[in-house]
Length: 510
Image (tube, rainbow, N blue to C red):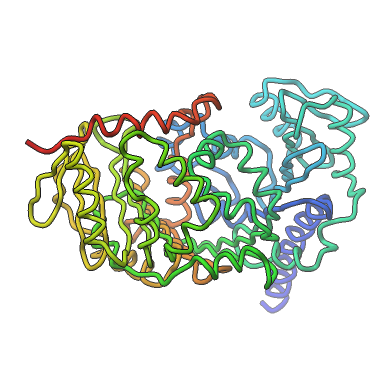
């Protein structure tokens, strides 16, 4: 028996070494001057999601209907193609970002080049041709190449001749550049334990956001987002560890001790608190909180820009929005959920820990009454009717809140949900998400433990659920942002029309 055990041990060592060598081979293709890189432990993800069973790739039956309903999703396309792509299921995959010929590049090991070639031709709608000795396809902004059992898929920064794209790809595949592995700090982070490890410098983060028209619109209407994107942060490090019952996320922002980012955070951030959750219904899809010192918060150029915009609106611009924001000292929280009755509409709750909530509530009521919009007051709440929704304003434990719901609330509050309560109580910035898709149910919670570090986790609603598979279901269920992406840049100012029209829809309850 002893010789058999030794032989099995040697075989295991060889298998592990083989997997390691394939992954390192791909890593050496990543240039040292990239702005970001993501390592994806394909074998672990396939095994823990039950896509890989006894060495064979198959789509779990419970995932199939979700893929069928979301076939336009890139992730769904990848999962659908997995059993027919000829990939090597024992090697990691890598994505890296550059500011040269390619914006992003995906590297995958193959065990069957011919199968992979057919899959890429089917997906791209093109045919492989030889350019400067490299088998490749160049369709629109995407470049596909296969060489020595490696698949490269690149997205160009701008349209270039196919010869230039082929030349850049050949340099990657030939490991002609100084490798990212020569950077010990990045190498250590990429090879940390986990299913996904990412090291993204700020240009890589910006590159990802620039591709989203959604982000462009949001940043125009919410300039506060630029506090993080347009800062002197050096890099963002992310790590995802997959366990049986949950997927754990950890993040670290790399910034110099005297950086503008840290000085800003030290100036505007306040103590967290869970009291805001006493005003947010537990059915909200998304709950977000940021604890701020209002008197410092309003001094930010981005907030001053918002205040100036608000003051330019007819009627509603007369409200002392600067005074309201200045009174915040603690969490400023928002809870939102899709309106189940009207497509594209949302139910919203806004809550803030204020130093003077009662006075602010009365000043808003006085303003509305002066315009003939006197509220009904019931059980301490000021109630208005707004279009198809009811607006309720009030104060609970020093928290000023505004609810804009199209139904009479009968459910409880998020404060009663222990994980959410603990999260908001200890995190100056916190996010909680819950899905309501009957086929993909789970929770995601994330909080910044300080200005640089954050931790989160995803876990299925069912205790018997496979966390990795349920996470894939949720990610596959996320709808694209077509409604935003089809919008013209000129529509960014429509917010003024919406808010200007708001006062006409606001009237007292009869």
